[in-house]
Amino acid sequence: MTAKERITMISDLIHKDKKVSVSELSVLCNVTEETIRKDLTKLESEGLLTRVHGGAILNEQKKYKGIHFIKRKDVQSDEKRTIARLVAPLIQNGNTLFADSSTTVAEALKYIPDELELTLVSNSTNIFLELSSKNIHIISTGGEFNKKYLSLQGSVAKENIYKYNVNIALISCQALDMERGVQDSSEGEAEIKKLMINQAEKVILLADHTKFDRAAFVRIMELDKVDCLVTDQQPDDVWTAYCTEHHIELVY
Image (cartoon, rainbow, N blue to C red; front, side, top):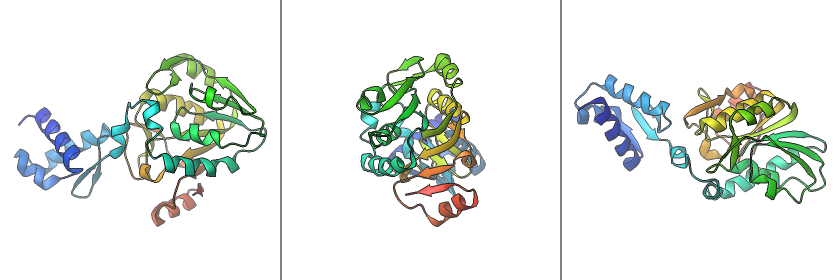
């Protein structure tokens, strides 16, 4: 069995069973366990799975990659609304904001009180209509239109982001891990988010509980760059201790 055939078979198995075992794959493919570990490492770097002791589990976030914004709005919708309500009190009158094009951030912006006067810079095309009734001065990054994400990307968007220094960057992600940091499935979106983070005084990360201890394709930033982590339910003790140790405000 060739390396390509092994990778294809492992991919099929993990999609079917949600998890795989190194020892079982070694027997099935008639190769050493070390070879299987290398195969799993490759698939993990592509965001398909997450390595665990003795094998790997399916990265459920992978199935959302490339799904149209309209469909993604309905994924974890209750969790997004919970997060949105928690974000609103963190925004103060007169703040300047970056907002990425994620559905979680879009939901959070809808809960900002109408009376707040804010300036918002975003690469999202969806929020132009969503926020039209609010007292928010919206600035578009411009750029190339990505239909799947309803977002603006590319060199023009990046150049325009460099022009602004803001109080807060509202960012979401596809995966969150203590070692791998904050990750996303789209390289184009990740590049935009990195720039927003670098130009902001404070980074507020919005991530529901399904994003924790997961892997995705592209690293956005290390966790120590996050100032405030907003999620929909209390994380486990390990995550709570991590946030305390790294001075990350945890809101849930």
